[in-house]
Length: 449
Image 1 (tube, helix red, strand yellow):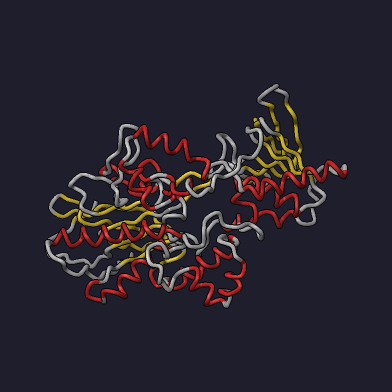
Image 2 (spheres, rainbow, N blue to C red):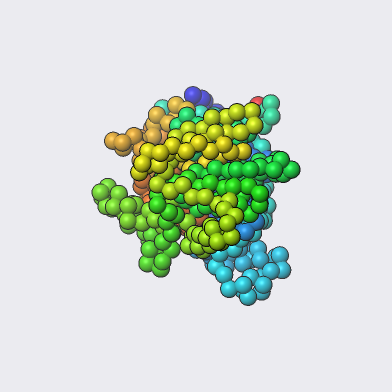
């Protein structure tokens, strides 16, 4: 724990962001727009660290025909600032596709196109980010017995840099979830590995794939592998009777509205649980109706033609996988009869979802100053600031991992634009309140070692 000694006057960032996925790209855009509006004297200084060498968002799932499940209007800025130059529509105009997109009459762009939009937007604010830098430590800096700043250490190759901050915004994203005891390998994939690994199978004439899971990603993997390898069987395994359609009806979609965050945050715990139970089918383990119908059509057509390659093992689960030098043996068990079926496959793909990364894991001893509830979950204010004791004056904000306090949009794109605006307002208001004036927030730089 570092001490601020008398006479020390380090220049610090008002905000350091950990991670530079869509959430913190949106944060950087909100900062840029704010600073342009208020001028240098009231600018908020910031820097972001991203461990990837360049921007990337679920690259392993950018299947060529996969579309977004969220409207293009829920981009990085539009719900906060409809006139922003960083909007998806501005992106389309810059690419010469705006009229073509309008004529397409579709609210849901290709996922590859939206990723290209994210890259375009991230490039506009890349002066704020250090790519190829992994944050390895966050250390408290004391002044008069209180934590006044946080020192953020990031590693790039063999070098370390240390930047000091008044506030952290943690946007470390999601991590692939695998069943307990199952490790990813050359033949056992998570669906996030798909496009990074599938090319290696070209020319090998794979004969069988097994895909586990009942959600959108699993169904997309089934459809993609069935189309990509016309000589291979694809076996889908899930515990449900069939794929369940996503509820994207008009009223149900209100669960993604900004106002729904206010209602969820103030609701009693039992109501929070009921809301998640009622509306989990808007997002979790559900599949777009068009994709369900496409897969059923393919399976029925194969039955008619007597060329079945697409197989569905419903009300079943995969109980184990055993690798051999050139195959994976997957054991499928019927939940109704207990019958066991052994499938020798070239690859087993787990479409078993994601878990939020533990942002507080980076905080070291500072994490001990963060409040938790009776279930061990971090307490978070409405402004997404982690609740702490008075001995920690810095703000620690979470972009993700707040589903228990803020609802279903915690890890989704739907509310990004609004959320970053709320976080920025909180940082500015707290900075002014701390000084008792409407002073400008100070400029900042980092140190290196």
